[in-house]
Length: 121
Image (cartoon, rainbow, N blue to C red):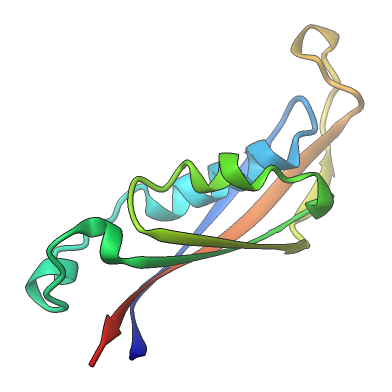
């Protein structure tokens, strides 16, 4: 069976306080899917269940080895999900606020691409 792409959605997420790459990555994925509806999954691709979609997520973020995969993928409500995390994004100097559990002045920025695919005959 061949896979066909229906849509590629892009997003950006920031963790301003806490220096958590998982938070930045999850926000980037949420941003990518925030304003989308996918009627083509049913009307064009003919799927009967949204979990038949294949959802491939690629995130670039500082400290990729610290990303908790299950938390990032939990942002997606449906689909057979996979995640690739790579080094990237950006670190920008902000302002540490101890009451917000900051470890330093870093703000972490992540970018994400979410691709929805379907199996076709």
